[in-house]
Image (cartoon, rainbow, N blue to C red; front, side):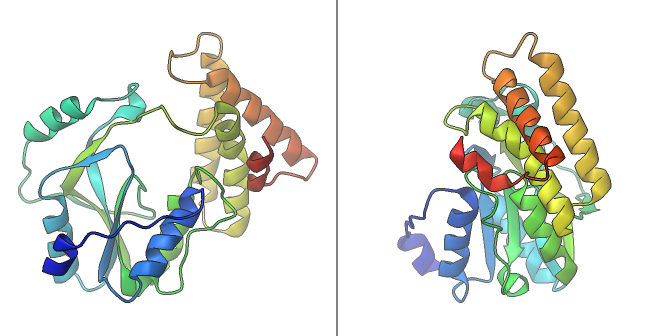
Amino acid sequence: MDQARGAPEVLFGEKGLCRQRNRALDALQDRADVIVFFDDDFIPAPDYLAIVEALFRVNPKLVGITGDLLADGVLRGGYSIEEAQAIIAGREHTFPPAITERHELYGCNMAIRVSAADGLRFDENLPLYGWQEDVDFTNRLGRRGRMIAASSVTGVHLGVSGGRTSGKRLGYSQVANIIYLKRKGTMRADFGNRLMSKNLFANALRSVKPEPLVDRRGRLLGNVLAVADCLRGRVDPRKILEM
């Protein structure tokens, strides 16, 4: 542990979330007991890592943990770092902490037991942003043990909109990736259908008067293209690489 704190390593991977996460898994396979994944816009509480370590230590059948968010900026147009820090500082501590069983983990903050993930990798057929890659990976991970969300493991997801994939690409992924994962058997049909319907409805409704930082019309166009490809039997998550 002291060596890890004193000698940080920076790894570079090819473009694409799944490829980059796989690069980390390959590098740490025989060097770590637990791997924690944070999105670049997630701010963890100061005790996040310590509590994750403790939970894995006392629960040998536990294979994955995700934190209960204090706030998610995706739902309100984003938080600043200062706002997130204030939310964390003002949090109420719940004793005993609430534990919820999970089918999948939320990829913005999740920790996995390395031994349980042996041979598992993120699906690189979900390119670039890799939308729903967390559901696919942790659905497979959950077949090997118990997964939970814990209120004591927490933080704030800023929900930053800048520097992300285009609206058109994301919109295509919102349909194509769900269809792909349902066929693969790593996304529950009821969950996938609700998610797809929700996004299609939101993009269509809000494209009339889009939010300032959300490309609703681009997303709607991507949705339509994916639905058309689905009807022709040609839907493929990798098509966003051509857009």
